[in-house]
Image (cartoon, rainbow, N blue to C red; front, side, top):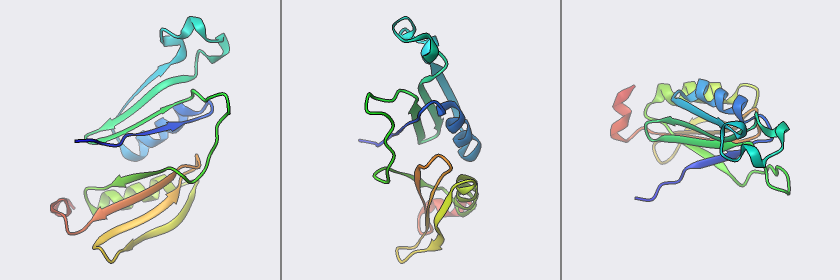
Length: 143
């Protein structure tokens, strides 16, 4: 099965953002700095504390990130969204509340015509999130 994993690029605040996402979503966070990597000797000293690779895992959830910005610099837009497919109604409500703090609740959670609770937001780091809970799935009994 092919799966999509989300990889976010930051401009020096990857550790802060990924720690925040861990507080919102739970899971195990692993961080590797440039200074801890085999790349350390090839990179400028002032980059040693930047995050080369971050991984936040909790079950099927895997969110990755890095401070490694290409030559063009960090470009932000609305062409990438992270879909959080929640297991129950409590999880979607808590996640929406936490992720929207300091950001913008662009589309509050609401019942949809397809039988889901759905909403979207922009978090305080400018990333777009889609939150979804299918009330008709077998998962809905986990309230």
